[in-house]
Image (cartoon, rainbow over all chains, first blue to last red):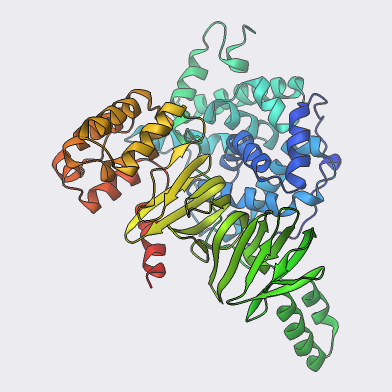
Length: 188
Length: 337
């Protein structure tokens, strides 16, 4: 896999949080200086967020492998990150690019029909609900997967993604409202 | 408490949200998260010079590709070394700012010297003061160093099994990771893994060490039992007692008591290794403790574990959710001399 893009987190349209913990900046700078333990700590802190972002976009069966792809790319490209405070947004963007690459490589699949009968097992039902979440507008999709799939709180989502808590709260509530409507329409 | 269940799970329960959480959480990241392992399908980066190939003539194109590709690869008979501090020597001769370490020659750093070995697309190895190492091989897909004493820090981007460091008591096989390996004058080695995995192998005895864990390897005994760095001193001493295997049975029993009493969920890797390392009479106890954290798959029986059956050990490893045993079985096949 090759990644030929330059990620500029300052160009993102969504409002950004100012309250990035100081130790994230310290860890990123240390990792940029070659501190392996610092990069390991960044992996430990952000892997769940990356997994959640990928779940919102990528073929589900490839997500675990793609998490590795994302952090490998992050490790290689870290020297080019000019704003250590934007690490969360930066690695989220890498995750979205990886998901797009994976989607292009994936074999064609049949989209799940909206009138599918109730699946025989919980895993099947979970994947159907995930498919509905993935049809939501992008801003809501990721926030909901981080909350419902990865179990992160609103505060954690804001801290990791770089969004303001206000934005996260709006995304959660509007996304959940839409999801309720769509799931209700599917079962009625 | 916010009183907003969707926000943080606190306050009056929203039954729809709670139902979705219960349904969707199994799709989330596993706890603990899997270690960071570089993918086997990672490809080599195109050399920068190749970008200019597209606008050059055909003859110049071929020449540029050959030159650029050669510049990115280690020399066929050696690797590039960069002096970072002091005066490292290669073959007992002080080196310039850059030098070449060829197969069979020794790189040494004294108390004030520091160097880095550039392995091209495979990664790099940083060499601490007070280290002596030699280059054993630089074959494609098989690069090997010998660390006689001192400390190296490896950052490896190659697919698993392509880079290894031999010591007097084990060979540390890189499985895609970042780690520190130290060897004392007595030949005792310690590996600390910061990211990914390292495999230690010596005469059929192997150990798999993920990020956050440490393993000690001893001459004549090979790799010890991996353990997390945040375990208690008593826990680590108990591991050493079992690995060294000295003294009366009561000592080993007391050590095992300590380990089983203090083991946490994240110590399942330690417990799994112990299944094959404790005496058969003690395997039931380890079996029960590990089963309390991760139930054995249906194919794994107490009797089979007691008898040390490899297929059952592998099946239980697969059940730990850390990657399949088939994967490290493949690199072991590639690794046999």
